[in-house]
Image 1: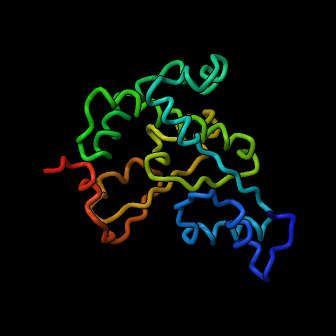
Image 2: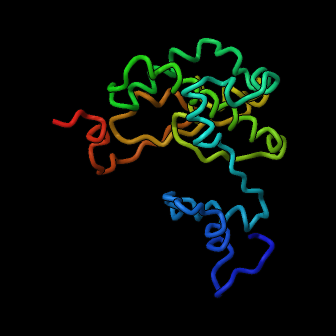
Image 3: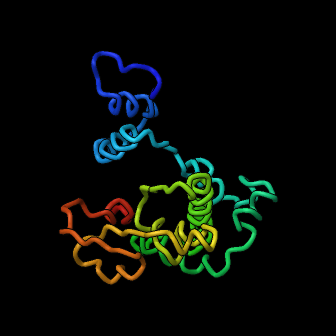
Length: 197
């Protein structure tokens, strides 16, 4: 998409976004358009870095062995979880309104750890040049997120920026920098998880 001229006089950023969309894409690309424009302006690579949804679901159901070969599990440290599992289970449970069955937590936590490890692996080719990862706060956390999966020297150079809403300031120490903005109006995220009466 970057090499071909955009049809119909559209901007190159809009053309790249249109080509990146999957058929059932519900991603709000308008929020990321400025970053796409910036990358195009400076001829920077744009890389999809996350573990696929399907692969993450398999890790959650069957464990890392179902998705990663032994050598890759070792390289990503998915053959050991170094104390990450308990914290990730707490985060997953809190993120699901404390309504998940306990039996679901280890698999979902392993899937999140696998995502962080894969995101870190995707960054490695660009670390010397400098790279920006646009991701959610959970993946940006220094203690259990992507930075933990970087090589030690890169961990020291990495900056983790959390975007927090007012009322969540207690999470600020999880990031190098926490930017706090007003809480956003949204429907109750727990409503869909509550049992129907």
